[in-house]
Length: 121
Image (cartoon, rainbow, N blue to C red; front, top):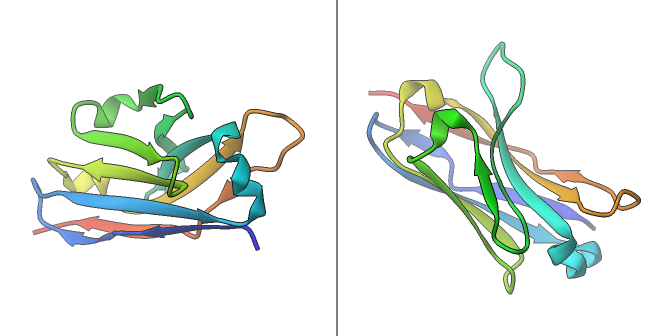
């Protein structure tokens, strides 16, 4: 069974930090290196938006609103991707989703179930 399981969300005060994890499972992720892993978020009443993504070679790109505050990384051996979030703001409050996007068009993409991040005092 193919799964992306996010963890690490929760309630944090403004200026605080959280680290999200996305663990992959399923035989298809023996091809983990063929996936670009990403984090997206969706706030109430808003569209889902890209936060950050990382290739198997370690190339990253970030949304402007998180540059300098968030860091995405991946552990190939563990087939896991992380999102370190620092200097959190109230506007970072959202459900954060992990995404696996294939580099080969015929392969499927996957989404996790999401983890809630709430930034509030």
